[in-house]
Length: 157
Image 1 (cartoon, rainbow, N blue to C red):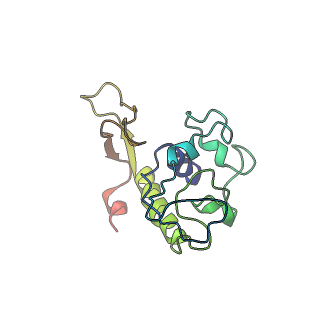
Image 2 (spheres, one colour; image 1 turned 45 degrees about the vertical axis):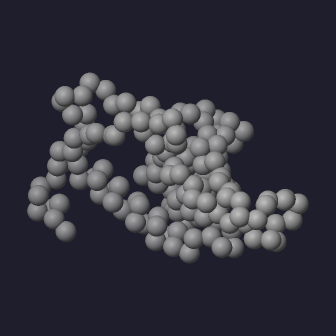
Image 3 (cartoon, rainbow, N blue to C red; image 1 turned 90 degrees about the horizontal axis):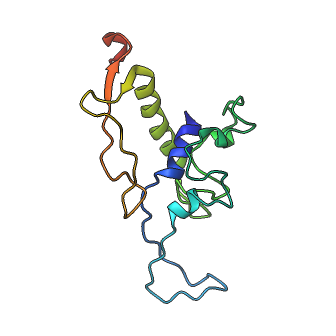
């Protein structure tokens, strides 16, 4: 599940928010008041970093290949210490809540996949996975049908 979410963050990351550069950035001249945006699409689909960067391959995030589980604490988070993609901010001023954010992302997805069987709605022949022209989000909304696979008393919290 973690590998699938990490791969999803590479392929369909949210748009970057502007960041202010402080004066202590040596070797770079950035005029005061400039907005800096990191291309998350460029990071997550960089062919110098990823083999087949446009293919959805969650196994690339596993430690030693597809048979290895993700039980290592360092890999359990959705944060990427090597900056191959950006899910949370990083560095000295990085997001303090990245572990909580990882759990708050992972647990709902895990429950959705565990508790339901997902399918294409009957009135739709295929799911359009084409991207928007502006960012990495889908051009059309993702529509799917969820059918409970567990008894309703198990689904209640």
